[in-house]
Length: 115
Image 1 (spheres, rainbow, N blue to C red):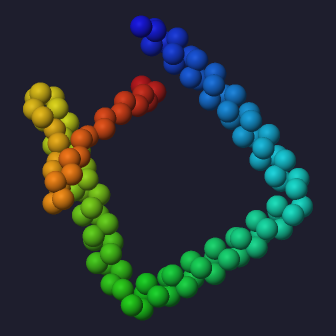
Image 2: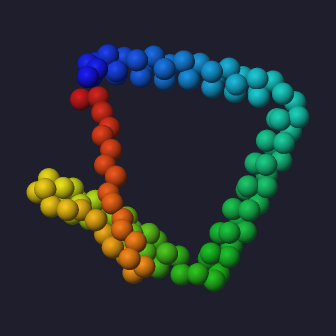
């Protein structure tokens, strides 16, 4: 098995290379006149779209109810994650069977944070 630090260093190098390539790509786009023209039009259209969405949202929907539902969904998602992780740590089977008898299995990920 590879050493954790070796893999981390290799990943760090590849991310730096990817960043350099993305920067180069962005620089070329900044120097492309047609792209800049289209980007400006796109920004205007996005702003107009957002304005229409906000107008309709304030007129026809209960904004507070939408925000409440969004918060409830976030809270329930965190609770679902906590329950699944606790079941996994207790070595219990972790799966959900929905109304169509489809089985849902959890997907766990590991992320590192500077500490």
